[in-house]
Length: 322
Image (cartoon, rainbow, N blue to C red):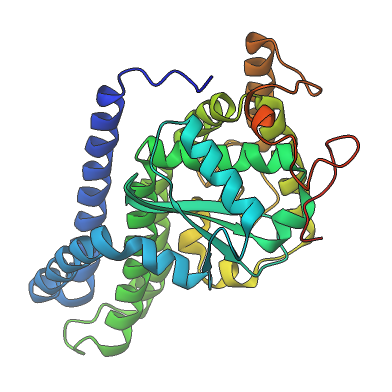
């Protein structure tokens, strides 16, 4: 049986309100940076740039995020097991089938993107396919589908675009701003540090709580929160030992991944793009207890996937790309 859909209009409305607040905050930050770099004229130019960026990112932020990580689309012919898994999970979640992408990257990780469930995509690294069992990967894909179903991906992808644009604005202003309006060296240095940090703080004020919400809904979609809990532990370990050079070069996209690709974890602090992995695992295990399922539980999604090439003898074998 698929998870109970129920009325979600209130939650979706709040997500759009939060997205609007985030875009307003980032736009105001654009204006402040423009003013410090070029006075009134600089502020007007920055606000115009922010308006264009907001509009462009609404329609194209998903493509930019996928292109930034060199993701390539796959289908039932090129990646039948992964594609079939996402298709079946989307059916259980009563949502449209998203596009599916692979990223040729050793670090185990995944993210979702898109402005709404009708225009969405999920992306997984080749490293995560080699690292996780079928059940664990199902938990991860269910988490990403939860972000799409909750309309989180619009905020996540717009934030990545806007945060990157703010950093570019600071660099451009310091290099090409007029000499008479350009701030002194100390202000320039502070701007180069504080402006991207401020964008990150605005982003984190919203994005971190959404991980817990996506974990919970993901556990319902796949049918067993333990699978996602085990996956988070393995992904965090993989991130700690396998750097993602593309993510390091584009840190504005770090919050989109299921585990921060720039670090192995960290405390639930203001400067963490994700909640502490241990706290997420604990919440998922509590959810599993409430649902009456455990590590050996088979029903739910696995009843649809009994013949999967991942299953092996014990059902815990790594993926077929290993």
